[in-house]
Length: 95
Image 1 (cartoon, rainbow, N blue to C red):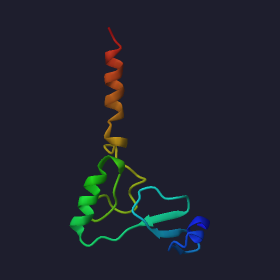
Image 2 (image 1 turned 180 degrees about the vertical axis):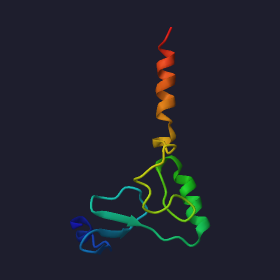
Image 3 (image 1 turned 30 degrees about the vertical axis):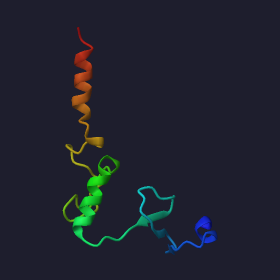
């Protein structure tokens, strides 16, 4: 926040979190970056471009808000079925 103030960058201090319009996936601790889009198609295009950099998405056409920290059994981190990976790894070690 101090750097933003020194550089006279626009941001909003809510008292709990800092909001800044910025096109970046990574924001500093206690800050949230956001950006505006002209249409839903622009959002979809941007999400497609980001591809592997995004682990999950919450929204009307995606996962329900509030469910991202409660994954289903078939929701695999980085789309890797951990049990299948371990079973294949174990089988390859058996002669």
